[in-house]
Image (cartoon, rainbow over all chains, first blue to last red; front, top):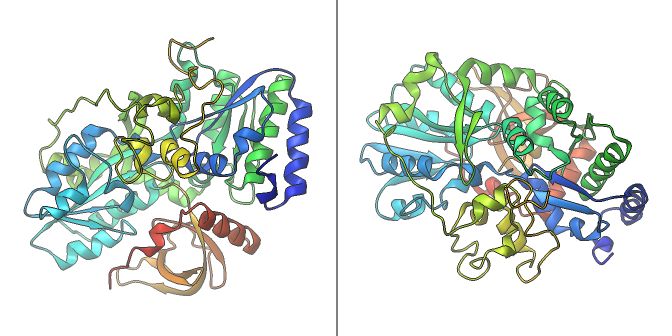
Length: 379
Length: 86
């Protein structure tokens, strides 16, 4: 109960924790999908307040972390071209590729610019008609509408010197991969609140039914997370497996229809590689035939770049819940947020960065070696 | 990077390309926000904003709680990115 004093509503947090304790009769493993939730869980010590029977494993919920090395190398190849202004969200600038990161390229003279919104690229492209402006369009469902709007506006306004390097990923196919892998230990999910704000949760209803797994859509407040855990545990204990929306003040079943419509106009599903995980069928979005002229991979001929990922960094196993950050010998020593070796340390939402920020680098935790996905699972 | 940040609309406008926009304040930092996905949003409404796009309207209490939480989590860095002048 060490951390409970810091909760916004201590009495309510203690009450929910009591209900969780009295509901649990046997071991369960839950996964929080979203990196923002991971961050909140580690910061508030939620995993340490739970009864021993409950284990939380951290999901692959950070789009910066899962952007494959190969795509980052393609970004670097494009960014080094003299005619290119390469625009990116700030999170991607420090993600290491095979050799360098975008900030290093910038220091060597590449025109790399951090943008707040994809729409900023329209203004940059108009201001520099003699240059090629390329936007690194990464993200989950939350970001897809903004990236779709950039491509849509580029076409509508006839801006020829703008293109997108697209590495969009979708959450439900990754959950399905976890659930269908032999040795999977994940028995329930906390669903990603802001992803569902856009996408809704009908896809999650299919997963809950197909795999008999409870999914509770929730937010990022410690109280929301605790309540989400309680709702998932109650479903598991009573043998139910449905989607419950504990975030109705933000999330609706159909998400944001206007945003989804724009995404469907511009993108189409495709197979997509996730860093550390490999190709997940139909887990990505790419520009559809109407917008292919704006595809930077095609425009700059980088489709042929193929990269093998490093075997040193264990971020891939962390992303899949097989290992936890302190299982890595480099964690907190040669790998820190200032000098990240791999993707889970680079973004504030990565599991390694969250563990590092909140002083988790000395502790070990029960079940840390156990797998929720791999063959080494205890089963 | 998936988190959306709550802000309050202080001014509505349509840009030169006909895109529905707003100026919104995030704890005192004012940013341009695209409202194409929340056409119902109006001045004084609270919106959840991700990479310059409003994804939803929320009530004031939800907005304030979420903003404070994101501040505690150190997830407001993107607000420091300067905007390009139009």
